[in-house]
Amino acid sequence: MRLYCFGESGNAYKVALLLTLTGTPWELEFVPFFTGGTRTPDFRAINPMGEVPVLVDGDVTLSQSGVMLEYLAELSGQFAGRDPGERREVLRWLFWDNHKLSSNAGTLRFLKNFLAPDKRPEAVFPFLEGRLKAAYRVLDDHLSSRDWIVGAGPTIADLSCCGYLYYPEPFGFDRADWPNIAAWLDRIAALPGWRHPYDLMPRAFPST
Image (cartoon, rainbow, N blue to C red; front, top):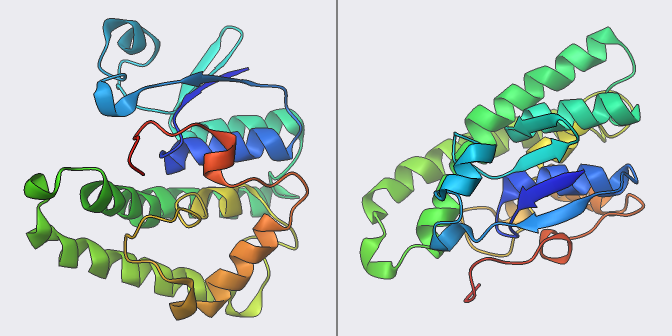
Protein backbone atom coordinates (compact mmCIF):
# COMPACT_ATOMS: atom_id res chain seq x y z
CA MET A 1 0.00 0.00 0.00
CA ARG A 2 1.05 3.58 -0.57
CA LEU A 3 0.02 6.42 1.75
CA TYR A 4 0.19 9.98 0.45
CA CYS A 5 0.86 12.06 3.52
CA PHE A 6 2.98 14.57 5.43
CA GLY A 7 3.90 14.71 9.07
CA GLU A 8 1.77 17.64 10.18
CA SER A 9 -1.46 16.00 9.03
CA GLY A 10 -3.34 14.49 11.95
CA ASN A 11 -5.69 12.77 9.54
CA ALA A 12 -2.76 11.14 7.76
CA TYR A 13 -1.34 10.14 11.14
CA LYS A 14 -4.47 8.15 11.97
CA VAL A 15 -3.97 6.01 8.88
CA ALA A 16 -0.19 5.70 9.20
CA LEU A 17 -0.63 4.62 12.82
CA LEU A 18 -3.20 1.94 11.96
CA LEU A 19 -1.00 0.62 9.15
CA THR A 20 1.86 0.39 11.63
CA LEU A 21 -0.11 -1.15 14.49
CA THR A 22 -1.60 -3.82 12.23
CA GLY A 23 1.78 -4.68 10.72
CA THR A 24 0.52 -3.85 7.23
CA PRO A 25 3.35 -3.28 4.73
CA TRP A 26 3.15 0.25 3.34
CA GLU A 27 5.18 2.89 1.58
CA LEU A 28 5.14 6.60 2.27
CA GLU A 29 4.58 9.10 -0.52
CA PHE A 30 5.49 12.52 0.87
CA VAL A 31 3.22 15.38 -0.22
CA PRO A 32 4.69 18.91 0.14
CA PHE A 33 1.40 20.36 1.32
CA PHE A 34 2.60 23.82 2.32
CA THR A 35 4.08 24.50 -1.11
CA GLY A 36 0.99 23.45 -3.04
CA GLY A 37 1.57 19.71 -3.28
CA THR A 38 -2.15 18.90 -3.17
CA ARG A 39 -3.01 21.39 -5.90
CA THR A 40 -0.91 19.93 -8.69
CA PRO A 41 -2.59 18.19 -11.65
CA ASP A 42 -0.80 14.96 -10.79
CA PHE A 43 -2.13 14.93 -7.25
CA ARG A 44 -5.63 15.99 -8.30
CA ALA A 45 -5.64 13.04 -10.69
CA ILE A 46 -5.25 10.81 -7.62
CA ASN A 47 -7.64 12.75 -5.39
CA PRO A 48 -9.87 15.37 -7.06
CA MET A 49 -10.75 16.65 -3.57
CA GLY A 50 -7.17 17.88 -3.24
CA GLU A 51 -6.69 16.54 0.27
CA VAL A 52 -4.25 14.39 2.20
CA PRO A 53 -4.26 11.54 3.09
CA VAL A 54 -4.79 9.24 0.15
CA LEU A 55 -4.34 5.48 0.41
CA VAL A 56 -3.65 3.42 -2.71
CA ASP A 57 -3.94 -0.35 -2.47
CA GLY A 58 -3.60 -1.85 -5.93
CA ASP A 59 -6.69 -0.80 -7.87
CA VAL A 60 -8.30 0.73 -4.76
CA THR A 61 -7.75 4.44 -4.13
CA LEU A 62 -9.27 5.93 -0.99
CA SER A 63 -9.56 9.43 0.39
CA GLN A 64 -10.98 10.57 3.74
CA SER A 65 -9.27 9.10 6.78
CA GLY A 66 -12.42 7.52 8.24
CA VAL A 67 -12.95 5.47 5.09
CA MET A 68 -9.32 4.35 5.16
CA LEU A 69 -9.53 3.35 8.82
CA GLU A 70 -12.65 1.28 8.19
CA TYR A 71 -11.07 -0.33 5.10
CA LEU A 72 -7.87 -1.27 6.93
CA ALA A 73 -9.71 -2.55 9.99
CA GLU A 74 -11.87 -4.78 7.84
CA LEU A 75 -8.91 -5.96 5.76
CA SER A 76 -6.71 -6.75 8.76
CA GLY A 77 -9.43 -7.99 11.10
CA GLN A 78 -8.04 -5.68 13.78
CA PHE A 79 -9.37 -2.58 15.59
CA ALA A 80 -12.82 -2.96 13.99
CA GLY A 81 -15.04 -3.81 16.97
CA ARG A 82 -16.08 -7.28 18.03
CA ASP A 83 -19.66 -7.41 16.72
CA PRO A 84 -22.12 -5.39 14.61
CA GLY A 85 -23.24 -3.34 17.60
CA GLU A 86 -19.68 -2.31 18.43
CA ARG A 87 -18.93 -1.56 14.80
CA ARG A 88 -21.91 0.79 14.60
CA GLU A 89 -20.68 2.52 17.75
CA VAL A 90 -17.22 2.80 16.22
CA LEU A 91 -18.73 4.52 13.18
CA ARG A 92 -20.67 6.88 15.43
CA TRP A 93 -17.43 8.03 17.05
CA LEU A 94 -15.65 8.29 13.69
CA PHE A 95 -18.36 10.65 12.45
CA TRP A 96 -18.30 12.60 15.72
CA ASP A 97 -14.54 12.96 15.56
CA ASN A 98 -14.53 14.20 11.99
CA HIS A 99 -17.27 16.74 12.73
CA LYS A 100 -16.51 17.89 16.27
CA LEU A 101 -12.91 17.11 17.20
CA SER A 102 -10.44 16.61 14.35
CA SER A 103 -12.00 19.22 12.07
CA ASN A 104 -11.74 21.95 14.69
CA ALA A 105 -8.36 20.82 16.06
CA GLY A 106 -6.87 20.66 12.58
CA THR A 107 -8.22 24.05 11.61
CA LEU A 108 -7.14 25.85 14.78
CA ARG A 109 -3.70 24.22 14.81
CA PHE A 110 -3.15 25.23 11.18
CA LEU A 111 -4.25 28.82 11.76
CA LYS A 112 -2.17 29.24 14.93
CA ASN A 113 1.01 27.57 13.79
CA PHE A 114 1.39 27.30 10.04
CA LEU A 115 0.10 30.62 8.72
CA ALA A 116 2.31 33.67 8.75
CA PRO A 117 1.55 35.73 11.89
CA ASP A 118 0.16 38.64 9.86
CA LYS A 119 -2.33 36.32 8.15
CA ARG A 120 -3.72 34.62 11.24
CA PRO A 121 -7.45 35.36 11.76
CA GLU A 122 -7.18 35.67 15.53
CA ALA A 123 -10.80 36.77 15.88
CA VAL A 124 -11.97 33.23 15.10
CA PHE A 125 -9.67 31.57 17.64
CA PRO A 126 -12.05 31.87 20.62
CA PHE A 127 -14.89 30.33 18.62
CA LEU A 128 -12.81 27.32 17.59
CA GLU A 129 -11.36 26.99 21.09
CA GLY A 130 -14.89 26.91 22.49
CA ARG A 131 -15.94 24.17 20.10
CA LEU A 132 -12.84 22.17 20.97
CA LYS A 133 -13.38 22.57 24.70
CA ALA A 134 -16.89 21.17 24.28
CA ALA A 135 -15.49 18.22 22.31
CA TYR A 136 -12.79 17.56 24.89
CA ARG A 137 -15.45 17.55 27.59
CA VAL A 138 -17.53 14.95 25.72
CA LEU A 139 -14.51 12.70 25.23
CA ASP A 140 -13.12 13.16 28.74
CA ASP A 141 -16.51 12.40 30.31
CA HIS A 142 -16.93 9.33 28.10
CA LEU A 143 -13.53 8.02 29.17
CA SER A 144 -14.17 8.58 32.87
CA SER A 145 -15.44 5.02 33.34
CA ARG A 146 -13.76 3.13 30.52
CA ASP A 147 -10.33 2.50 29.04
CA TRP A 148 -11.32 2.67 25.38
CA ILE A 149 -13.93 4.57 23.43
CA VAL A 150 -15.80 1.45 22.29
CA GLY A 151 -15.74 -1.96 23.93
CA ALA A 152 -12.99 -3.61 25.90
CA GLY A 153 -10.08 -2.87 23.60
CA PRO A 154 -8.74 -0.28 21.17
CA THR A 155 -10.57 0.30 17.90
CA ILE A 156 -10.33 2.70 15.02
CA ALA A 157 -12.55 5.01 17.06
CA ASP A 158 -9.60 5.53 19.40
CA LEU A 159 -7.14 5.95 16.53
CA SER A 160 -9.38 8.50 14.87
CA CYS A 161 -10.06 10.60 17.94
CA CYS A 162 -6.42 10.67 19.04
CA GLY A 163 -5.14 11.83 15.67
CA TYR A 164 -4.32 15.45 16.58
CA LEU A 165 -3.75 15.06 20.31
CA TYR A 166 -0.11 13.95 20.24
CA TYR A 167 1.13 17.00 18.33
CA PRO A 168 3.32 19.52 20.19
CA GLU A 169 2.08 22.68 18.48
CA PRO A 170 -0.39 24.71 20.56
CA PHE A 171 -4.04 24.54 19.59
CA GLY A 172 -5.94 24.69 22.85
CA PHE A 173 -5.27 21.21 24.19
CA ASP A 174 -3.47 20.66 27.48
CA ARG A 175 -3.40 17.13 28.88
CA ALA A 176 -3.40 18.47 32.42
CA ASP A 177 -6.91 19.84 31.88
CA TRP A 178 -8.34 16.51 30.73
CA PRO A 179 -7.03 13.68 32.93
CA ASN A 180 -9.17 10.93 31.41
CA ILE A 181 -8.05 11.85 27.90
CA ALA A 182 -4.44 12.00 29.12
CA ALA A 183 -4.63 8.48 30.58
CA TRP A 184 -6.26 7.20 27.39
CA LEU A 185 -3.52 8.75 25.24
CA ASP A 186 -0.95 6.98 27.42
CA ARG A 187 -2.77 3.67 26.86
CA ILE A 188 -2.71 4.16 23.10
CA ALA A 189 0.97 5.11 23.20
CA ALA A 190 1.67 1.88 25.11
CA LEU A 191 0.30 -0.28 22.26
CA PRO A 192 3.04 -2.37 20.62
CA GLY A 193 4.35 -0.52 17.59
CA TRP A 194 2.95 2.91 18.50
CA ARG A 195 4.97 5.81 17.14
CA HIS A 196 4.67 9.59 17.36
CA PRO A 197 3.41 11.29 14.18
CA TYR A 198 6.75 12.98 13.48
CA ASP A 199 8.48 9.61 13.80
CA LEU A 200 6.12 8.02 11.28
CA MET A 201 6.00 10.77 8.64
CA PRO A 202 8.39 13.56 7.65
CA ARG A 203 7.39 17.14 8.26
CA ALA A 204 6.44 19.40 5.37
CA PHE A 205 6.84 22.67 7.28
CA PRO A 206 10.51 23.34 8.01
CA SER A 207 10.06 25.62 11.03
CA THR A 208 7.91 23.28 13.17
